[in-house]
Image 1 (cartoon, rainbow, N blue to C red):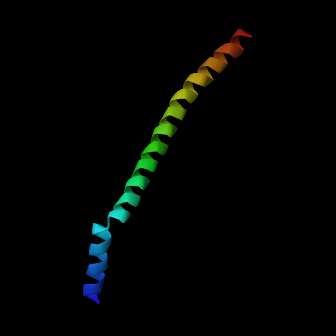
Image 2: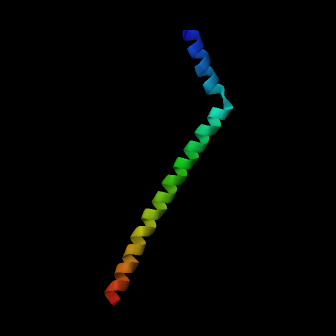
Image 3: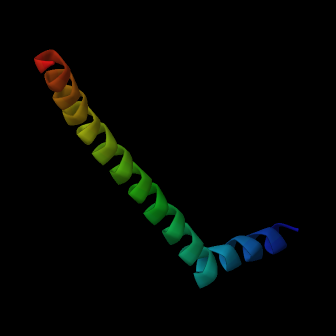
Length: 57
């Protein structure tokens, strides 16, 4: 039983397909983090410009 479990763990670790899935998940999470950071950075600038425009009116 323990030998079967260790064999399955070893197969998972050395399985290149599983590694590829993990790489895609990490890449997707980094992309989401970058898009979120850009959105919040632009959001502050857009709010300031909108408020400035509204104050001039």
